[in-house]
Picture 1 (tube, helix red, strand yellow):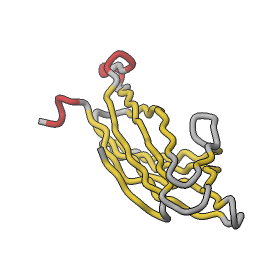
Picture 2 (cartoon, one colour; picture 1 turned 90 degrees about the horizontal axis):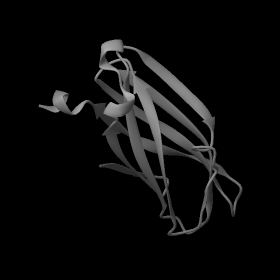
Picture 3 (cartoon, helix red, strand yellow; picture 1 turned 180 degrees about the horizontal axis):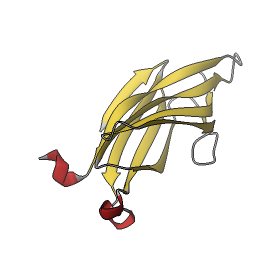
Length: 128
């Protein structure tokens, strides 16, 4: 598990290779990731947007941006956490992702950026 605290928000990530949804002969590799977001601030926050940078070992890069996470814009009170699972497809056995969330302090109405730690995705046999 990889974790990072920025702007009072802790983001933790775990990744899983999905062999049943992958087709290595067609260079299709599917990964799932579980993210836990914890609010360590003294004020409630709302997650508005996400922005991902995705890389694979073929050298290709792409960016994904959009509202919320998995169709939700969660609100976290102080001390609360939110967890979700999503996925990423790669054209190779190894890749990396990192990104940011745009959040709002619901007391002050100020928006701020939270960093999502860089995490690796790899087919288990490539880890040896």
